[in-house]
Amino acid sequence: MKHLKELGLLVAVAAVSAGVSCLYVKHYGNNEKIIIQESQQVPVQYSSLTHGGEPVDFTYAADQSVNAVVHVMTTYEVQQSQMSDPFLEYFFGERNFQQAPQKRQASGSGVIISKDGYIVTNNHVVDGAAQVNVVLNDKRQFKAQIVGTDPTTDLALLKVDAEDLPTLPIGNSDNLKVGEWVLAVGNPFNLTSTVTAGIVSAKARNINILSGDMKIESFIQTDAAVNPGNSGGALVNTRGELVGINAAIASQTGSYTGYAFAIPTSIMSKVVADLKEYGTVQRALLGVQIRDIDADFAKEKNLETMEGAYVASVGSHSAAGDAGIKEGDIITHVSGNKVKTVSELQEKISRFRPGDKVQITILRNGKQETVSVTLKNMMGNTNVVKNYDTKQLGATLTPLTDKQKSSLGINYGLQVTNVEKGGRFQQAGIPKGYIILRINNQKVTSTTDVESIISTLKGEQEKALFISGILPNGKVVYYAVDMNE
Image (cartoon, rainbow, N blue to C red):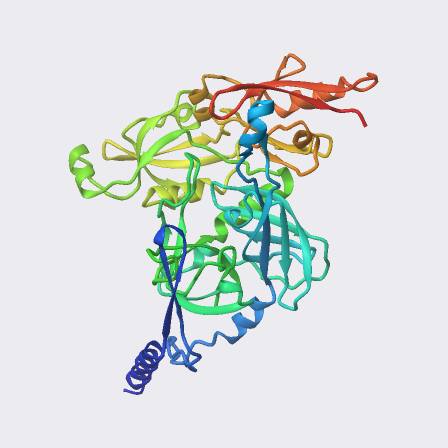
């Protein structure tokens, strides 16, 4: 009876809190309205009861979290459209005048994961930024270096030059249970170290917000209030452990409406380790196209189960094909761990690297069997994939995916995925997205080829790279890069 009274009090307090809320509307372009709800500060005693009958205490987790969550400020250079002068065109022919780039700023959150300054945030928080700064909860500010990014998981790793920073211990997101209390910590609306509470509403959610064939979506869904600015912030359990990186909300207004999503630490830890060691994520692939099973599809294919990932096709010379997996198989387990959906399968495979062997359990014609699969990378082998990033070039070069090769009708090349301000590539006018096919008339199939070509320049009086390649739209373009000191 006492517990029922406590729960009744909780509902009453929540109702009062909702009753004193105030709304304001801010207008943006295209007549969109972003409705932001601000609640007056009403003391609320959370009365969710544990098995022992004691209220859940969030103060320890909050105290552990606020100092390890930072405010991430990004600066972008936006190139203005070209302007023409009709008067000068009349006398001197057509001329265009490029306006100076305009600077714009955005912000998000990040989580310190090591005392020596490594910080995790979302890729969309820092993507394309010319400069990144982080502000700690104690108001100290640092310029941050982008160590690496992974758009397929929406994660990015930053590094600041500092020591003895406050950190959050990394917990095991696999141990999270639906209904468990969690905290969301971040910087919504530029409010430093804001803490909200909620429960885990679901796990392994796929909400189709990331782009690309290689995307991995297996979000933790929570009803903790998360708003713009929380992106990259911490999802923390009641023990003060990091269990996820807040990434998205489901909303038609642009603000919190009850559904928030976080990237689990099971994915984050692997991505961070790869970015630290290689500068790019070592993505392991089965080489299959898969789909979830619903009632209609199960009836169509006469399937006896709706759990697992249905194999729609198997790539030639793929890891799955080499292991004997066939179209129509249903993948039910990875290394003994059950998978019920495509997102769960993708999350489990994302923890491995090319060359790792995993035991895949399949259901075929009603019979279960387990096969050993040696996972491969996107290029169909087990080699380590590296980004080539040197001060010599001022650019990041990344191997092409099979889809890029197919769409452009080529079978080799490297894409420029980042161009540093003031670097040789920028000085030569080489844009991000450009695909290098040849350097000094030699085919470029890997970053090793680039290293080899640059090494041949040693001792030459005039050092230059003559590059031929294509833009993403297929247009052939040539550049010359001065490599003299």
